Figure 1 (cartoon, helix red, strand yellow):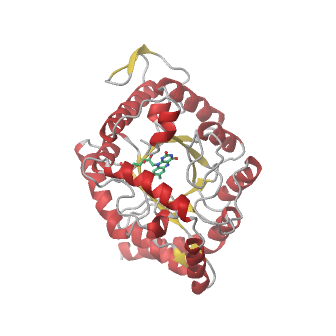
Figure 2: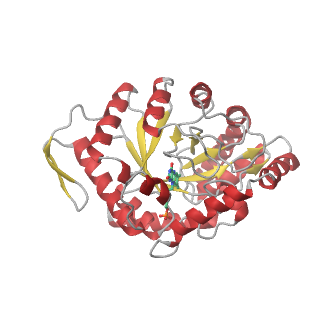
Figure 3: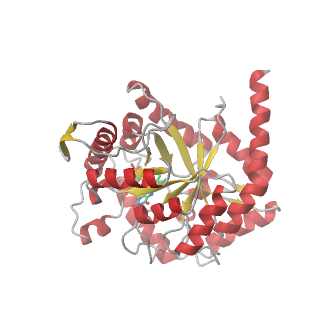
Length: 367
Ligand SMILES: Cc1cc2nc3c(=O)[nH]c(=O)nc-3n(C[C@H](O)[C@H](O)[C@H](O)COP(=O)(O)O)c2cc1C
């Protein structure tokens, strides 16, 4: 099956130092604002619809410095014209009413381009050391579901009310509400995770499901889980997949670059990261949490992005993308080694082939 809508593209905002791979290989990518501002402008001129800003409050593995996600996202929104910027947020770090108000304001300042990615977290020490109560996995997901429901209520209704175990809202009017645009009644809500609870809750309450990197078949299985839950709730949910792209004119060069990233991995940081995230994944009731079966190679990219297999010539990468699209993927969330130059390369060399292949498939569907 191919959906007729063109594939959409997002990139990971490098608002955290060290780039997207835990490797000492040269990365011509910077986490500072000037670099990011130009990157965002370059991205919207090269076919990117969205940018995703990571949330991190303290040094984690290979990521010593971080800019705060919501404020950084707002700065990028103000520096661009069309790009939608998604801030990652942890429900246990925010009051949902304060976040709803922040995003409503950001939405007005950007003519309706603000979005959020509600993530349930894995970095226990970060929360505990900040004095924040760390709930077990299932409870973090219950909290996240209430968080999203509360935000939708306050964004859409006067006399808003919500009564949950974590959050309460009584007869509340928030004005202005975010902009209600055609096909986008509120700022979009993304949500990531591999576990069964992640899939079912994304189906019930989010607009988008974000998956770590995986094979086309692995992603199809996750999509089936999300769709089953969405169907029960009478909803549809779109799907985005993470992929680390290494596209080069020459296939051998692309693969050599990937191997060099892995050969120059920082083993201590990769193993430290692997230890922390596997503990998080094992704590899911179904033991299918993110990173459960990730090996050393996979963990060099924070979100299993090598598994998606976007490595090779522009033709090869574009064909690979179409394989995912046929299984129901709507968007690719892309990471790169040298962000600014590779975003341009993507726009010039890969995207035109993706669009040609999509047009050819659409003709086949009609025939
Ligand atoms: C696309 C994507 C982006 C994520 N961004 C962040 C982030 O910025 N900060 C963070 O602490 N966790 C982030 N996570 C991880 C989540 O917090 C969480 O650990 C994961 O979704 C748990 O999945 P599980 O349900 O399989 O256990 C992200 C996950 C995905 C898929």
